[in-house]
Image 1 (cartoon, rainbow, N blue to C red):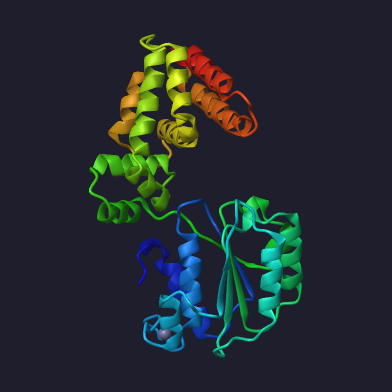
Image 2 (cartoon, rainbow, N blue to C red):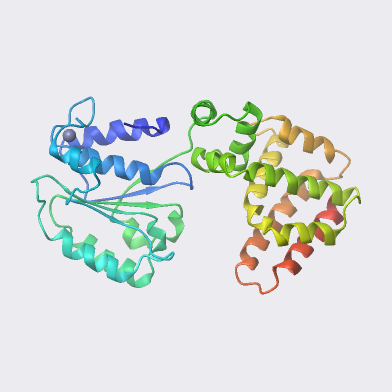
Length: 322
Ligand SMILES: [Zn+2]
């Protein structure tokens, strides 16, 4: 049962590939976070392991399907990061498995989730397997960061990029998943760069309201109704600055809207545009603030005093948007 409707085309296409028995040894699923690539990889594995696949999809009745359902199919292995790294030992275990033939005379499927988390040793170990692919093994790699995958790995995989769904599909799906207002759903899609699984997270974790609070802080800074110190305290004590990437997505959408690039319009950003209508060269200042946000994100990974970075960001904001 596919619950992510925007993956339907990928799934139908994969069913045809399996039916035609023209299965590649290795596939790399890429695309931004929150589009359901891991779900897609697991669906693809299920299709490959169903023993009674038809044009309608998997049968849900054969032993392959039942073993998948209980999470106990011996021909499916999943590798995911332990403490943010996929270790070389995990890849070596995989190498041992791929030489075994399927226990049910089907395919043997190995999924590597978030392959960008392989370190150099793991990537090189995987490369060896890809250089001499054994028969009837399907390796499915997923990644949020296509650029960080070794070129030699990429060149040995069939590349499938998963794109964000259309606004209508994403909106319809979110509407079914949550009780939130249309405006909240729209706003969360803006902050999520149209990735529905990120958007649902924003709605469920109240992050949307936190980002609204942060935007209101910025507005108050420019009006002098809050001080740099107040805002900085607020963002640091509660570690709100972790939400800055969403704020970046928000300003990026605002920029696209002002350049008339097809984008979502809703009150959320229309309000803000009117807040800063007085600012000269608004677009170039937003662009500058976006690059300051990106710089902040990079520097904050290693900074000892995040407070200082937050203050610097806020001072720059106030100078440009007052
Ligand atoms: Zn089946």
